[in-house]
Length: 303
Image (cartoon, rainbow, N blue to C red; front, side, top):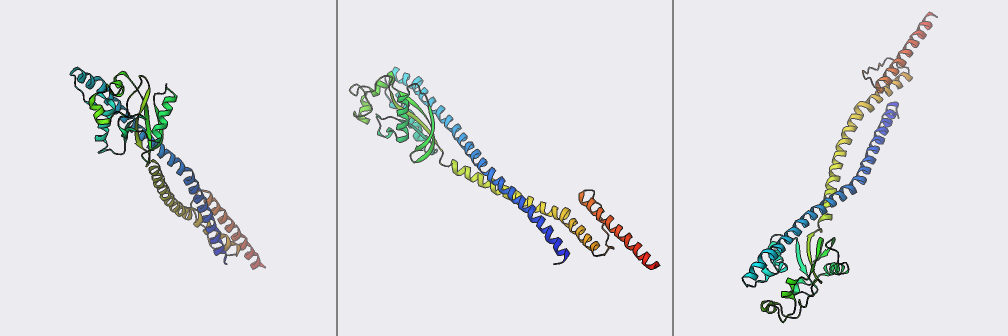
Protein backbone atom coordinates (compact mmCIF):
# COMPACT_ATOMS: atom_id res chain seq x y z
CA UNK A 1 0.00 0.00 0.00
CA UNK A 2 1.40 3.42 -1.00
CA UNK A 3 1.62 6.37 1.39
CA UNK A 4 -1.20 8.08 -0.49
CA UNK A 5 -3.38 5.01 -0.09
CA UNK A 6 -2.53 4.90 3.62
CA UNK A 7 -3.45 8.59 3.98
CA UNK A 8 -6.74 8.01 2.16
CA UNK A 9 -7.43 5.04 4.42
CA UNK A 10 -6.80 7.12 7.55
CA UNK A 11 -8.99 9.91 6.27
CA UNK A 12 -11.68 7.40 5.41
CA UNK A 13 -11.36 6.08 8.94
CA UNK A 14 -11.89 9.61 10.27
CA UNK A 15 -15.01 9.91 8.12
CA UNK A 16 -16.28 6.56 9.37
CA UNK A 17 -15.75 7.56 12.98
CA UNK A 18 -17.47 10.88 12.35
CA UNK A 19 -20.42 9.12 10.69
CA UNK A 20 -20.56 6.63 13.54
CA UNK A 21 -20.82 9.47 16.05
CA UNK A 22 -23.67 11.01 14.05
CA UNK A 23 -25.49 7.67 13.78
CA UNK A 24 -25.16 7.10 17.52
CA UNK A 25 -26.49 10.61 18.09
CA UNK A 26 -29.41 9.83 15.78
CA UNK A 27 -30.22 6.57 17.60
CA UNK A 28 -30.06 8.30 20.98
CA UNK A 29 -32.35 11.04 19.66
CA UNK A 30 -34.86 8.45 18.42
CA UNK A 31 -34.64 6.50 21.67
CA UNK A 32 -35.30 9.64 23.73
CA UNK A 33 -37.75 11.48 21.48
CA UNK A 34 -40.02 8.61 20.39
CA UNK A 35 -41.43 7.89 23.89
CA UNK A 36 -41.74 11.61 24.61
CA UNK A 37 -43.65 12.21 21.37
CA UNK A 38 -45.82 9.13 22.01
CA UNK A 39 -46.84 10.17 25.53
CA UNK A 40 -47.27 13.81 24.55
CA UNK A 41 -49.52 12.80 21.63
CA UNK A 42 -51.48 10.43 23.83
CA UNK A 43 -52.01 13.09 26.50
CA UNK A 44 -53.05 15.53 23.78
CA UNK A 45 -55.62 13.04 22.47
CA UNK A 46 -56.91 12.36 25.97
CA UNK A 47 -57.21 16.11 26.58
CA UNK A 48 -59.22 16.42 23.37
CA UNK A 49 -61.47 13.58 24.51
CA UNK A 50 -61.85 15.31 27.89
CA UNK A 51 -62.99 18.50 26.18
CA UNK A 52 -65.54 16.56 24.14
CA UNK A 53 -66.68 14.83 27.31
CA UNK A 54 -67.12 18.16 29.08
CA UNK A 55 -69.33 19.44 26.26
CA UNK A 56 -71.51 16.34 26.38
CA UNK A 57 -71.84 16.59 30.17
CA UNK A 58 -73.01 20.18 29.82
CA UNK A 59 -75.44 19.19 27.06
CA UNK A 60 -77.00 16.43 29.16
CA UNK A 61 -77.26 18.74 32.18
CA UNK A 62 -78.99 21.33 30.01
CA UNK A 63 -81.51 18.78 28.71
CA UNK A 64 -82.37 17.63 32.22
CA UNK A 65 -82.66 21.22 33.44
CA UNK A 66 -84.99 22.06 30.54
CA UNK A 67 -87.23 19.11 31.35
CA UNK A 68 -87.30 19.87 35.09
CA UNK A 69 -87.76 23.64 34.88
CA UNK A 70 -89.76 24.12 31.69
CA UNK A 71 -91.49 21.01 30.34
CA UNK A 72 -92.58 19.27 33.53
CA UNK A 73 -94.22 22.34 35.19
CA UNK A 74 -96.03 23.15 31.95
CA UNK A 75 -97.38 19.60 31.56
CA UNK A 76 -98.43 19.46 35.20
CA UNK A 77 -100.24 22.76 34.85
CA UNK A 78 -102.07 21.47 31.76
CA UNK A 79 -102.67 18.10 33.46
CA UNK A 80 -100.96 16.33 30.57
CA UNK A 81 -98.65 13.36 30.75
CA UNK A 82 -95.81 12.73 28.35
CA UNK A 83 -92.92 10.59 29.56
CA UNK A 84 -90.03 12.58 27.98
CA UNK A 85 -91.65 15.73 29.33
CA UNK A 86 -91.62 14.41 32.88
CA UNK A 87 -88.38 12.44 32.94
CA UNK A 88 -85.03 14.03 32.17
CA UNK A 89 -83.67 10.49 31.85
CA UNK A 90 -86.12 9.58 29.12
CA UNK A 91 -85.67 12.91 27.38
CA UNK A 92 -81.87 12.49 27.45
CA UNK A 93 -82.21 8.96 26.06
CA UNK A 94 -84.41 10.20 23.19
CA UNK A 95 -81.96 13.00 22.38
CA UNK A 96 -79.08 10.49 22.55
CA UNK A 97 -80.85 8.24 20.03
CA UNK A 98 -81.01 11.06 17.51
CA UNK A 99 -77.52 12.26 18.36
CA UNK A 100 -76.02 8.80 17.86
CA UNK A 101 -77.41 8.55 14.35
CA UNK A 102 -74.63 10.90 13.26
CA UNK A 103 -72.26 10.68 16.24
CA UNK A 104 -72.29 7.01 17.14
CA UNK A 105 -68.83 7.19 18.71
CA UNK A 106 -70.29 8.61 21.92
CA UNK A 107 -72.34 7.01 24.68
CA UNK A 108 -74.98 8.87 26.67
CA UNK A 109 -76.68 6.52 29.11
CA UNK A 110 -78.80 6.56 32.23
CA UNK A 111 -78.50 3.20 33.95
CA UNK A 112 -79.93 1.56 37.02
CA UNK A 113 -79.88 -1.86 38.58
CA UNK A 114 -83.65 -1.43 39.04
CA UNK A 115 -84.65 0.15 35.71
CA UNK A 116 -88.02 0.55 34.07
CA UNK A 117 -86.43 -0.08 30.69
CA UNK A 118 -84.27 -3.25 30.52
CA UNK A 119 -81.98 -1.43 28.07
CA UNK A 120 -80.86 0.68 31.02
CA UNK A 121 -79.36 -2.23 32.93
CA UNK A 122 -75.73 -1.40 33.82
CA UNK A 123 -72.71 -2.93 32.13
CA UNK A 124 -69.84 -4.16 34.36
CA UNK A 125 -68.03 -0.80 34.35
CA UNK A 126 -71.26 1.04 35.14
CA UNK A 127 -72.14 -1.41 37.91
CA UNK A 128 -68.73 -0.82 39.53
CA UNK A 129 -69.25 2.94 39.36
CA UNK A 130 -72.75 2.64 40.83
CA UNK A 131 -71.44 0.59 43.75
CA UNK A 132 -68.73 3.17 44.35
CA UNK A 133 -71.25 6.02 44.47
CA UNK A 134 -73.34 4.08 46.96
CA UNK A 135 -70.28 3.37 49.08
CA UNK A 136 -69.30 7.06 49.03
CA UNK A 137 -72.53 9.08 49.31
CA UNK A 138 -70.71 12.42 49.13
CA UNK A 139 -69.09 11.64 45.80
CA UNK A 140 -70.56 13.76 43.00
CA UNK A 141 -68.64 12.74 39.87
CA UNK A 142 -66.19 10.10 38.73
CA UNK A 143 -64.01 10.39 35.64
CA UNK A 144 -62.16 7.29 34.61
CA UNK A 145 -61.10 5.12 31.69
CA UNK A 146 -62.67 1.74 31.06
CA UNK A 147 -64.42 -0.61 28.65
CA UNK A 148 -67.99 0.14 27.68
CA UNK A 149 -69.71 -1.84 24.96
CA UNK A 150 -66.38 -3.46 24.10
CA UNK A 151 -64.78 -0.06 23.43
CA UNK A 152 -62.14 1.70 25.50
CA UNK A 153 -63.69 4.99 26.66
CA UNK A 154 -63.19 8.01 28.85
CA UNK A 155 -66.21 8.15 31.18
CA UNK A 156 -67.83 10.89 33.21
CA UNK A 157 -70.44 9.59 35.61
CA UNK A 158 -72.66 11.07 38.30
CA UNK A 159 -75.16 9.46 40.66
CA UNK A 160 -78.91 9.69 40.13
CA UNK A 161 -80.67 10.09 43.46
CA UNK A 162 -84.36 9.54 43.91
CA UNK A 163 -86.26 12.81 44.32
CA UNK A 164 -89.88 13.56 45.08
CA UNK A 165 -90.69 14.01 41.40
CA UNK A 166 -89.15 10.63 40.57
CA UNK A 167 -91.60 8.80 42.81
CA UNK A 168 -94.48 9.74 40.51
CA UNK A 169 -93.19 7.16 38.00
CA UNK A 170 -90.90 5.03 40.18
CA UNK A 171 -92.83 4.73 43.44
CA UNK A 172 -95.64 2.31 44.09
CA UNK A 173 -96.59 0.69 40.75
CA UNK A 174 -100.23 0.70 41.90
CA UNK A 175 -100.36 4.50 41.68
CA UNK A 176 -97.92 4.94 38.80
CA UNK A 177 -99.44 6.52 35.66
CA UNK A 178 -101.06 3.89 33.51
CA UNK A 179 -98.98 4.96 30.51
CA UNK A 180 -95.79 3.86 32.35
CA UNK A 181 -97.11 0.46 33.46
CA UNK A 182 -98.55 -0.29 30.03
CA UNK A 183 -95.17 0.29 28.37
CA UNK A 184 -92.75 -1.12 30.97
CA UNK A 185 -94.83 -3.45 33.12
CA UNK A 186 -94.81 -3.46 36.91
CA UNK A 187 -91.93 -5.82 37.77
CA UNK A 188 -88.95 -3.46 37.62
CA UNK A 189 -88.21 0.22 38.11
CA UNK A 190 -90.46 0.84 41.10
CA UNK A 191 -90.41 1.22 44.88
CA UNK A 192 -87.67 3.86 44.88
CA UNK A 193 -86.96 5.43 48.26
CA UNK A 194 -86.48 9.18 48.54
CA UNK A 195 -82.79 10.10 48.56
CA UNK A 196 -81.50 6.69 47.46
CA UNK A 197 -78.84 6.40 44.76
CA UNK A 198 -80.97 4.55 42.23
CA UNK A 199 -78.85 4.85 39.13
CA UNK A 200 -76.09 6.48 37.23
CA UNK A 201 -75.72 9.08 34.48
CA UNK A 202 -72.95 7.94 32.15
CA UNK A 203 -71.35 9.92 29.34
CA UNK A 204 -68.46 8.37 27.43
CA UNK A 205 -66.18 9.31 24.54
CA UNK A 206 -63.97 6.74 22.81
CA UNK A 207 -60.31 6.26 23.66
CA UNK A 208 -59.80 3.18 21.51
CA UNK A 209 -57.96 5.13 18.83
CA UNK A 210 -55.82 7.22 21.21
CA UNK A 211 -52.94 4.75 21.29
CA UNK A 212 -53.10 4.31 17.52
CA UNK A 213 -53.03 8.08 16.99
CA UNK A 214 -50.12 8.49 19.39
CA UNK A 215 -48.19 5.67 17.71
CA UNK A 216 -48.88 7.10 14.25
CA UNK A 217 -47.64 10.54 15.31
CA UNK A 218 -44.52 8.96 16.82
CA UNK A 219 -43.83 7.13 13.57
CA UNK A 220 -44.33 10.32 11.56
CA UNK A 221 -41.93 12.12 13.89
CA UNK A 222 -39.36 9.32 13.55
CA UNK A 223 -39.63 9.42 9.75
CA UNK A 224 -39.20 13.20 9.80
CA UNK A 225 -36.27 12.94 12.21
CA UNK A 226 -34.67 10.22 10.09
CA UNK A 227 -35.07 12.32 6.95
CA UNK A 228 -33.57 15.37 8.63
CA UNK A 229 -30.68 13.34 10.01
CA UNK A 230 -30.10 11.77 6.60
CA UNK A 231 -29.97 15.19 4.94
CA UNK A 232 -27.78 16.56 7.71
CA UNK A 233 -25.47 13.56 7.50
CA UNK A 234 -25.07 13.97 3.74
CA UNK A 235 -24.45 17.71 3.98
CA UNK A 236 -22.05 17.41 6.91
CA UNK A 237 -20.15 14.61 5.16
CA UNK A 238 -19.81 16.78 2.07
CA UNK A 239 -18.63 19.74 4.11
CA UNK A 240 -16.24 17.62 6.18
CA UNK A 241 -14.70 16.05 3.11
CA UNK A 242 -14.27 19.42 1.40
CA UNK A 243 -13.14 21.46 4.39
CA UNK A 244 -11.34 18.85 6.51
CA UNK A 245 -10.50 15.53 4.88
CA UNK A 246 -9.39 16.81 1.45
CA UNK A 247 -7.05 19.48 2.91
CA UNK A 248 -5.63 16.92 5.37
CA UNK A 249 -5.00 14.51 2.46
CA UNK A 250 -3.24 17.29 0.56
CA UNK A 251 -1.06 18.22 3.52
CA UNK A 252 -0.33 14.56 4.28
CA UNK A 253 0.69 13.94 0.68
CA UNK A 254 3.00 16.96 0.77
CA UNK A 255 4.58 15.72 4.02
CA UNK A 256 5.25 12.31 2.44
CA UNK A 257 6.82 14.01 -0.59
CA UNK A 258 9.10 16.02 1.70
CA UNK A 259 10.05 12.85 3.55
CA UNK A 260 11.08 11.34 0.21
CA UNK A 261 13.19 14.38 -0.62
CA UNK A 262 10.81 15.76 -3.19
CA UNK A 263 10.67 19.31 -1.94
CA UNK A 264 9.49 21.04 -5.08
CA UNK A 265 5.80 20.53 -4.26
CA UNK A 266 4.54 23.73 -2.61
CA UNK A 267 1.51 23.95 -0.35
CA UNK A 268 -0.68 26.95 -1.01
CA UNK A 269 -3.60 27.36 1.36
CA UNK A 270 -5.24 30.67 2.26
CA UNK A 271 -7.28 29.34 5.17
CA UNK A 272 -6.87 31.07 8.54
CA UNK A 273 -8.03 28.21 10.75
CA UNK A 274 -6.10 25.29 12.29
CA UNK A 275 -5.91 23.49 8.93
CA UNK A 276 -4.36 26.63 7.44
CA UNK A 277 -1.85 26.80 10.31
CA UNK A 278 -0.92 23.17 9.71
CA UNK A 279 -0.46 23.76 5.97
CA UNK A 280 1.77 26.79 6.59
CA UNK A 281 3.83 24.82 9.11
CA UNK A 282 4.42 22.03 6.60
CA UNK A 283 5.25 24.63 3.94
CA UNK A 284 7.80 26.24 6.30
CA UNK A 285 9.26 22.78 6.88
CA UNK A 286 9.49 22.25 3.14
CA UNK A 287 11.25 25.58 2.67
CA UNK A 288 13.67 24.80 5.48
CA UNK A 289 14.53 21.45 3.88
CA UNK A 290 14.86 23.20 0.53
CA UNK A 291 17.37 25.67 1.94
CA UNK A 292 19.30 22.88 3.64
CA UNK A 293 19.46 20.92 0.38
CA UNK A 294 20.67 24.01 -1.52
CA UNK A 295 23.38 24.65 1.05
CA UNK A 296 24.40 21.02 0.94
CA UNK A 297 24.63 21.10 -2.85
CA UNK A 298 26.59 24.36 -2.74
CA UNK A 299 29.15 22.92 -0.33
CA UNK A 300 29.42 19.76 -2.40
CA UNK A 301 30.02 21.86 -5.55
CA UNK A 302 32.82 23.82 -3.89
CA UNK A 303 34.52 20.69 -2.75
